[in-house]
Image 1 (tube, rainbow, N blue to C red):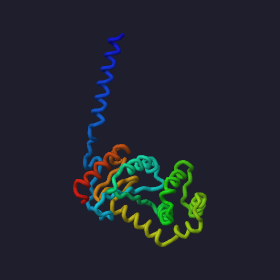
Image 2 (image 1 turned 90 degrees about the horizontal axis):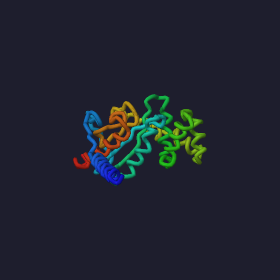
Image 3 (image 1 turned 60 degrees about the vertical axis):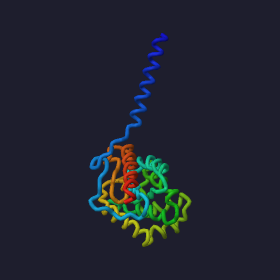
Image 4 (image 1 turned 120 degrees about the vertical axis):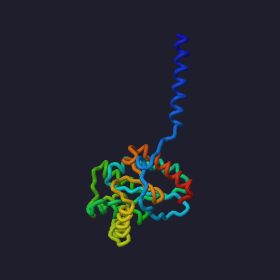
Length: 215
């Protein structure tokens, strides 16, 4: 019995060592497989930083599933990473979701309510595509209904929503969520093969931009 226990201890130690070696093995990232290089690089707003954009849509279940991992990724980024979300409306009837995003942003409520919007859509089966339905829901979150509607209907918010779609076209976004890095590279869970791999690719691309001198 003693010999068996000793042998088992040795095997467990070797297994632990093997697992540690695998954990330390860098993840292989390949251009064309895990990420794509845009044929035309886009201008970035954050000079001297790494600009990361997530193109998303409130109603996208894959965006909802990716959000927790994306938030965890953001928490461990250095101050040289500039991040922003850009809503995409692939059809005109989905434009209310982009208007909702920018109206909340204009009122300083985006950070507080974006997750709640997605929860309402994906867990409470709310569509939030009708102006009155949207305004009622926002008011239920403690936001002044009239103030929200004024923002929602404003030219500034409409312009931002239109510009977001134009930016998506410039980046050749054909699905969400898609993450763009430094106006040059795009990746996504569908491109990389999984949400976890996409996060690894994002790390790779951010470090690549740093090594290239934020170019």
